[in-house]
Length: 217
Image 1 (cartoon, rainbow, N blue to C red):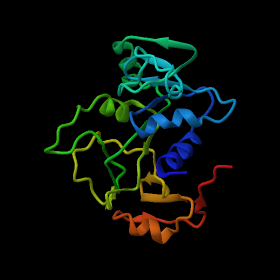
Image 2: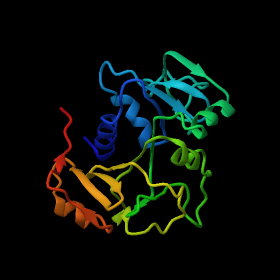
Image 3: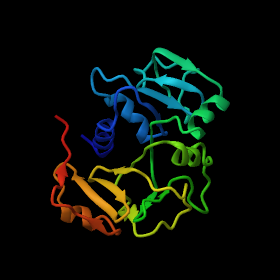
Image 4: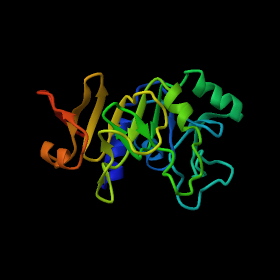
C-alpha cells in the first residue's frame, strides 16, 4: 500500500453504522472506497449530494455527478441531491457525525491549517471552516511530511481553518489524538517506529504505555 491508501484505509475504520460523513476533496475522498463490508454510511458533499459512492470505473464517469472538488463519484441506491443552502444547513447545524479533511499543518493544540498558503493562488476555503466548526468529529487525513517538512508542528505558521481542536490526525506513519494534555500518539503505522515518527514531527508527542499499531486485517 502507498501512503495515501494506508491513510484512507485507517480513516475508514473510524466509520460507524448510520453516520452522516463529509469527505473533503483529494485524499479524504478515497475513504469511500474502503468502507467495511456491510456497513451503511452516508457520505455528504458540500455541493449537495447525500449518498456518495466511490470513484467510478474509467469510462463510466457522469459529468453531472461530482464531489465538491469536481471529482467524479458514484451514488449509492437511495442517494439524494439537495441544494447548497440545505447542504450547508446540515453542516452548520451540527448534523454531520464526522468530517474527513486534508491538512497543511496541525499544531500541538490540535488546530488545523488547511485552506491557504500565503502568496499562492488557491481556490478558496470552500466549506473547510464550516466543517471544522460544525461537525461532531473532525478527522485530519494527511501525509506526515511535505517535501521533507514536518506538518505536525508546535504552532501553525499558516492561517488557521478554525479555532476548534480537531478530533484525530491520521497519517501513513501514525494515528495521533489531540487532547487537553497535548498530542497523544495512539498507533504507529506499518513498519514505523516511535523514533521514526518523532524524527518526522516537530511537535511534542505523548507516548502512552498502551500504544497500538495500525492493522488492516
